[in-house]
Length: 303
Image 1: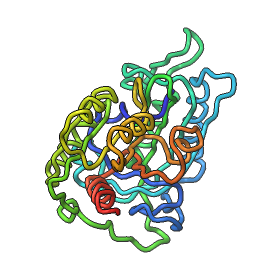
Image 2: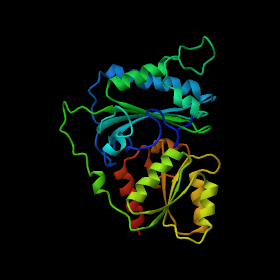
Image 3: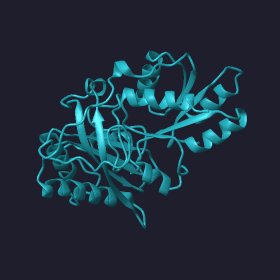
Image 4: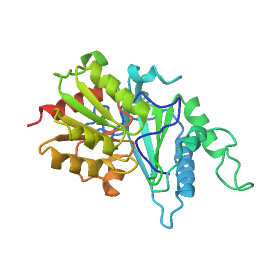
């Protein structure tokens, strides 16, 4: 399976909430312990184990690797309007990533359906992932699959935070508080049409001038024009030339061009697998409108 940027499962593709690294709080700051879950510990360990076993089975490599990470996330109202049954609020994020062969879109769309399986006849019931999905939904949670052929897969599980032994934290800024642009030009490069449309729509509403491309070749064609581009916002894993190589080629054409990456992978997985260097500016999908606004504004205002 191939963890990445584009396709995801659960209510279709599109609106993006915030995702954070292990140990981050809902604003991406380090040091806060992962929020507690009001679930019996055995249940969500079973969820993680089932996901990991299924991903490793599908990895189809002689030395497959499965990475499990945890963190905190906030799903905002803007995102939840597009996903049936998901409530805005604070969640614990469990991310399971493999290094396998990736999943085609038709498999992603059916991955959690009862009795659906890619195994040979008689080799499986097709109930494993559907049971995982059922537990997550019964717990008030949310799940997404990100995958690209040849690049592995990431499954992100969001389970509601419990306040039983903790004090609630404020959710942070609302979408209305998001920092606005100053008509700077942002080039958005994303192979998933729904994700690209969401990012373009959001940035346009924030007073940015937005140009878009579905792949690296189209992006380089835009950069070869004489028009201004202030920021390259690119997916990391794409068919053909990836985001890292695109950024290198773009900077040869436009020295000093600022680059912000986005991906469905966890930061640890994408750095350890050599797709990006440590220390680069990276947003993890799914991300909220406010996180997108803040990260773009910060990049543009950096010296």
